[in-house]
Image (cartoon, rainbow, N blue to C red; front, side, top):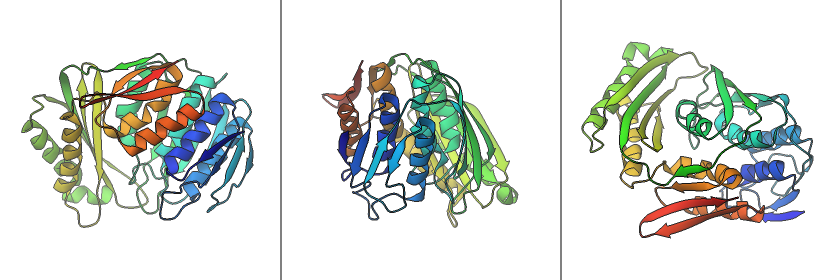
Length: 339
C-alpha cells in the first residue's frame, strides 16, 4: 500500500490521489489530508469525491467521515454505469468531475455521473469555463465526454445539477509548447433572472469586450453571449477566453453582493491578460488540471508559472509511478509527461 502525506496540499491533492488510485488500482493511505488548510481533514465536498470514486471502483475505504484526516483507499477496476452524488450546499461540481474524468481512460463501458451542488463557485473552475474551455481542449486529444447542466448553482445554497457523460477514451499526447498567435477572443456572461432588470449580464459582457479590445492582445472578439438563468440564489459569472493557434487561456470571475458588474468583468480580464503576457499555452489553473493527461498520454505544456501547487501535484504523480516533471528554461516553465 502506498503511503502518502497530505500535509503540503489541499483538496486537489486528495482528489488526484483518488483518481490515480482508480487508474492504477493502487491502494493508498493518506495522512494529514488537507493538512495545509486552516480546517484540515475532509469537508463534505471531499467526502463526496471519496464516496463517488469508491463507488466507481468498488473500493474498500476507511476514514470516510467529515473531519477525518487519515484515509485508506483500496480500489478494484473502474466500472461504468450511472452514478449520483450530492455534494450539499455549494460544494464544487466541477472539482468532483475533475476527479472522475481521467478515469475515462480506464473504462470498459460508458459512465455517467449526476451531481448536485455548486456549478460556479469560488476556488474552482466555473461550469461555463469547464464546458467551453477545458472539455473542448481535452476532446481534441481523445477524451469522449459531455456535460449537461440542468440548473446552475451559486454560493451559498448551491442547488445546481449537472450530468457528466464519459465513454472509454484513449487520449493522445498533449503538444502545447508553442501556442502560436491568438486567433479569437470569446466572452460569455451569465446572471440569474432577478438581475435581468439591471442588465447585469450585458454590463459584464460590455465591460469585458471594451477591456479586451483596448488590450495588447490585438484579437477580435468573435463570440459574445449573455444569458439569464434560474437558480436557488442570486449569482453571476463572467468568462473570458483567448484561443490561439495551439492553446487556450481562460479566466472567470463571480459576482458578489455589492460588487458592480463591471468589476466582475475586470477581474476576469485582469487574470486573463496576466496569463497571456507570460507566453503560456494554457492558463494557470488549466496547467494544474492537465497534469493527469500528461501522466496518462505524455506530451508537453508551456505553463504561465511554476507554483507550489503544480510542484506538489506533480510529485504525487511520481509517487504513483508516472513521469511528470517541470522543465525550466529561462522564464519558460514547461510541464513534460513521459509514458
